[in-house]
Length: 269
Image (cartoon, rainbow, N blue to C red):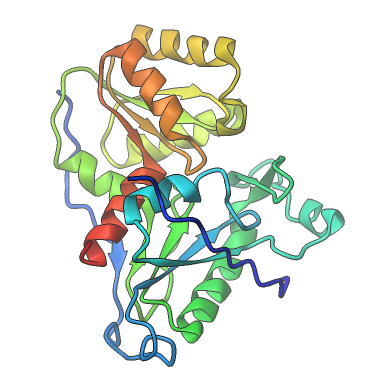
């Protein structure tokens, strides 16, 4: 894994179907959540680690999250692909039977990787950030992962989404935007396995500027009778949420903003 320090300072922001069962694991806390750190003793601002499975900084989504968190939080970003060459990244590509993930590289391009290659890399970054002294860490990926080891609070977007949906009722089906056509079978299977009847529609979060693609997704969700929509990739943006909500007339959840609101609550903001 690359050793590049991907930290970034962001500017202060401007002035009914129902799931079944209990959600678990959205917030992972170890037994030493209040252990003081060398930096925490000097600066009382919460330090939030953010881990992408791609390359940091995530200048596409983190600024929107910072608008929610405000200037009182310090952000430290790390990426599972930081410092890797194109050849090294290509070696992490999914095989035909792999669970696949799509993520963003530092140059703005997107890449598919196998989830099995990411687990150990994410764990190493959790360990690194906790050694650095973060208050908590948030994963910037909505994929379903095995349980990670953490001593500080650790926020997993997939579990946050699942817990929220299990507490809601709405008329119609659950609409899911998944980031590519290749994702559709595994995304549908994942949501069915936790008790939902999803209508899964592909839309790349890295091609949201394409009006035709966005219009096509709206048509598919409407024809599938979606009564609530989840944008099931951390790369989807607020502006796309606003367009979908306006066109469909139903609630639309964008994962990165939801994670930011959870982190803000944990920070007491």
